[in-house]
Structures are given as C-alpha cells and as structure tokens.
Image (tube, rainbow, N blue to C red; front, top):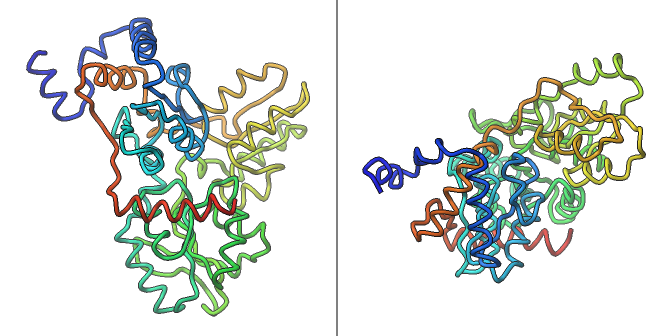
Length: 368
C-alpha cells in the first residue's frame, strides 16, 4: 500500500486505483469475491440503484423489505447495503450483533431524511405539546433517520411505509386525536386525504422557522405535516401531466405518493414502488404508461417490458443523486476491504436509539 492509498483508507475516500480499472475488471473481481465468500456475504440492492450495482444484488426491493431480508439471512456475516444511509441503519437495527452492515459510500444519504433531525423534532414536539397537549401521536416514514424512528418509538408512535401508510394512519387515529407525520409532507398529505381528512384540517410544521403554518382555528387541525419532501418526486409537476394529456391522451399516469397532492390528484394511479412495479407487471401488452418515480427504476421497467410503451412522466428527470453515490467502484472497494480485513463504512446504530427505533418498527409490523 502506498502513502496515497493509506491516506485514502484513513479518510474513507475511494482509492485512485478503482478509478483506473475498467468495468470488466471490476465486475470480474466482484464476482470472484462474491463466490469466495458465498453465504457469508449478502448484497441487498434498492430499486433505485444503477444497473451496474443491481446486477450483483442478492435481493432487490424497497428499504424495509431489504432490511428484513438482511435480518432473515442469518448466515451472512457481511451485509453490503446498496442503498442510502437510513436504509443501512434500519438493517443494522434488525440484524444480529455479529452481522456487520456496510454502506459502500458514506455520502449516500437521503435529502428527505435529512430534513428532519432529532434536535428540530424535539423542539417541534415541545411546542406542539404546548399547543395541543397530549393529543398527538408521531408517525415517521421509514425514510427517516434512526433517531427519528427512536423518537416516535419513545412517544408511542410508529413507522410507516408507502405501502401501509393508510393502515398506520388509521391506527394512529384510534390512539390520538392528531398525528405528526414525519418527514415527508406529501406522503402524509396524500394518505390523510385518501382517508377522508380534508386539506383544511392539515397544518405544516416548518422546522426552519419553528412555526406551525396554518390559517384558521388550530383546534380543527388533525394532521401536522413536517415540511420535508423527496427531491426526486417533487420534480414531477402538474405541467408534466398537462403536457402529456395533450401529447398522448391515451397514456395512463402512474405516480408515487411522495409526489405532491396536485400531481397525485391528476394522475390515474398512485402507489408505492411495489405497487408501481406490480401494476406494470399486470398491465396488458400494448398499454401505455407514464411513470412518476426515480429514473433508474423507470429505465429498468422500460427495459423489462418491451411489449408496453413506457416513459418517465418528466422527460428531463435525473436519477436520485445520493442513491447514485453507490456505484461499481465503491461496491468493489467495499468487498475488497472485507476481503483484506480493513473494513470501511460500518453502520452502527447506538444501542439505546436502536431499542426505541425497534419499538416504532414493531408497532408497524404488528399491524400492517
């Protein structure tokens, strides 16, 4: 190891040698390492990952699904999670003590999860309790940090996924009069609206100003939405839909509920990533679809369904930038570090945080 490589190993940056390798060389090494470790190595790959990474995934799915599969894979000593930071945290919470969860690039975060940190949340909670007393239950989308999950766990709340959000919000209303929904305002708004809560009974908490955004009598508020969003799904617009309705009126529009309320309302179908995939799988040959979700997944769906006409709802969409931090060089680097015993980027959630986060996860898993 030369001096440059030693420095790069210490600061966690990708060594130069990986930038000089060809894709074929890297793919060959990944295959070799996977074969040598066998069942001791498990590589979960999120749907939004690049094909260059997904080709080596042992399982492909959504974040919670992959974390659960990691936990179920008891033979695996090393879990190289090809996703983003909060997903690897959930995997660490669910897996056993002797399993190591590794994120190939620590820069692979999630802008949505980062929009609600624990200090903002605790300040907001204190103010909301002053306003509403003990009438609020916190719910958090699984696309959140372990600390936010733990906050919900400590305060009687739970996690939700985009697939089970309706069931969990319905449950929450059996517990308290109001809910605080973190960190994605769009999923919270779309879910509550579908359950019959009018928009006039929803407020927004702005963590940057520490203020409740609402016009009217606060006593009428039933849902408090954290002012966060997915930077990918917020880029699908009403204008995209209006243009498509003119240019291709026979095309069905299918979007993720992380899109804005206006976009979901104008679409033909809305649902989780699994719902989107299943809907296209069931669709008849020759059907036409515009999909409003992450571009790597849309491209993969297009490739897998040559018998259907499929486009992205936003023709100028880019893939999720933070998810794309995980690439073939970083995957290989992680695997070679395991091979040499110089493991980088181990994700370890503090025990107390993991305990409380597990309470929030279990409340969901018991009901949804």
